[in-house]
Image (cartoon, rainbow, N blue to C red; front, side, top):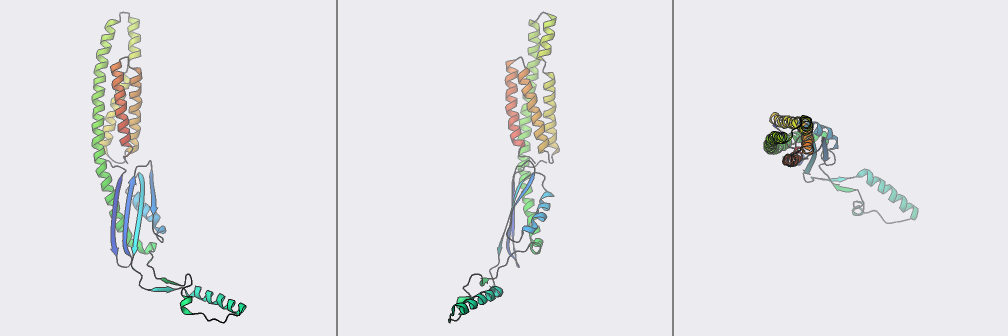
Length: 275
């Protein structure tokens, strides 16, 4: 089975001590495997762990990993006593220096920046990993399923297009055989006949193109991470089709070779999406 590099997977769950955790994975095509993270503060230490889980399942693609955590509502307040002590020390120094008699009211003190705040349930990397890992694996499973589904569709499309190439090549072979016989009947001199056969011969190109098409289909049937191999094969197919079009003495064959080049280019565009 082949897989596309395009896919999406997500999973979320409510965790009593933390809040709602949501994991999203989005994947697009890429030459190599690249993982980009959008993580909440406090989870940056988990990047390596998350990356290892992804790399164990996926070979190629650009993966965007987004994790959101909606924490529980604050259950208390936090007073920064150390900062308050510093404020009081400085304010008392100012009172003495400028002979200020006014007292320091409590309601004024708690309004000072950084003194009073709500207690937040900030996620901590290692503490949250035991809850996050199962969600990540479920999101990964969903991502893999969508990649495989699109991969099956791509495989069917590529097999159909390669079959069209086979039919086109068969027509070229038949046309080549009949046209060579017809041209030879018109040439009387043996030396001229030999020169024509040498210059017009495209049998090698046709054989190579036939081999590449068969190899391409076999790779799709075999499946696995074959995107780079398929891309290389389509380059070789394009090269042989170019030579066919350039060497052929017959306009019909040249025209069919150009049509094959167009078909191969469409195949190569689709191959770029395969893992």
